[in-house]
Image 1 (spheres, one colour):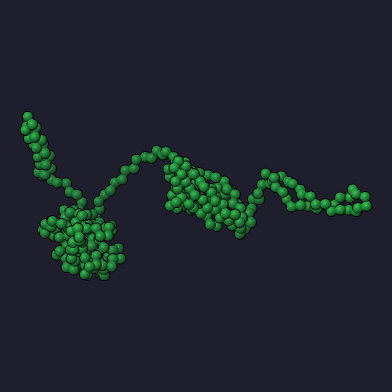
Image 2 (tube, helix red, strand yellow):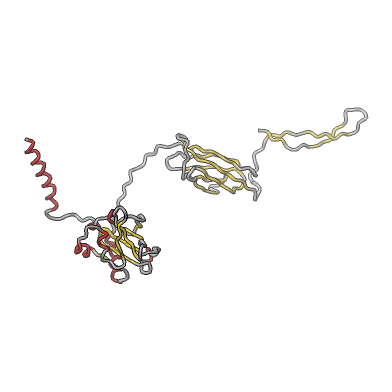
Length: 288
């Protein structure tokens, strides 16, 4: 590349008789020089782009894009591609940069960019999918109902809300979980058009429902979620008496704690397999 500088004027003797000195202007062409190492302060530009999957040409969401000034070790800025793979750096000082795009499952992409003043640069980057050997991940989930029930018993001792214990459940022998609320003051069990039972308080206000401390889907019936044998305890609160972590409810709170599965002891441990085996023997005898 060659760069043309502004014209320079110089004097030369006139070759035509009768003429004095004439001023001649001519362009001087010089080889291109490397850009200055320092860019003007306060001059900014913009950079925008789209990240695509090279194999499918679909947008890559969640890709991380960083801009690092040449000669610097720390990225100047870091953004993330949106749901359609687009990203933008709205304000960036002009200069030479290294653009790096990273996304799990793709090869990293690195390119050098020259961002000029008063010019918004737009790019389209295609990432190459990368086959990755990932070690298997083992997730161990431990039920912590016993620890949670310690909080249950502590709140029950304060007598703020209304409580249903495991002993109450075994004494009542309910067919459905909703049957446990029929004896709780201020709570009504109302069936919907499909016959699924729902809880209401203060007329037709539905309380917030939590199972093991996690908010349940709004409108979900307890009878479709749990069996009475799965329940360890129940807490019922009005809005004013709810524990702080559940105090956002407008109509009160119902908290259900589930049981840790118990291993059946005694006869039940061998009786069921023996019954199945006896049935198979009976079938074989009839076939013969």
